[in-house]
Length: 267
Image 1 (cartoon, rainbow, N blue to C red):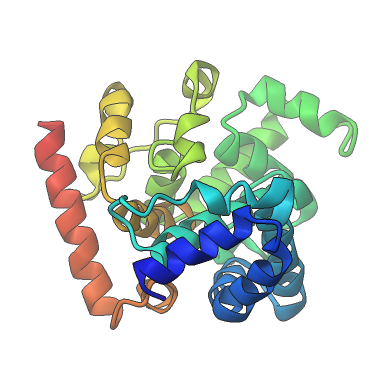
Image 2: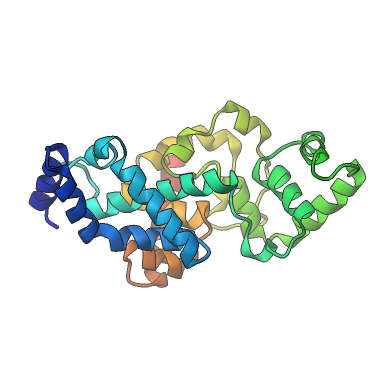
């Protein structure tokens, strides 16, 4: 749909005939919304629930979210819509579990190990705070047992996964970036990637405030790519499919170019 068509759609959503405009919007953009939901969820049933959540939130309060789109902005409507839908997917996941999904390589863990992973690696709680969290569900877990589990988890994660866990709060997209406050910074875990590559410059906590400003200044589509890759750990192929880029190689080149510009800005 061209800019003139988007403008007409937004005007219709503001009018008394908004129901017909909403039906027309769903006919045109439901595939985009469902594709985004499917990329964020483990199966088709979950994708359907997530898709419904996206639609409900887009229609909420007389289409308030949709009407925020700026025709004069840098992003196209469909790119902007993918970003909005992606954020709504994050909200849906948080409402169900309140935490990031564990990496696929960790999905075989026991419930106790998953709780330790969530407390120590996702939320950055101290060992004492973790024991308090475990007390109601797993009473009697000792500090030494916790240390053994944590060590086993630490060794099972790849260096890239360690980097993702460390950078997740720093590279979170949109409101995830805004949500990173002083308290979360105090509890975050500093796990430095031992490899020397294009990603390691982002890790330093002292650069976090500057990094956030640099990331926020990027075009919307580039921030989306960073979120998909580093915030959600999607593969290059998945990102190519979700964003409409041709293939994984093109996504890799795009990420490398973005990181190069971020590195220059950080200097």
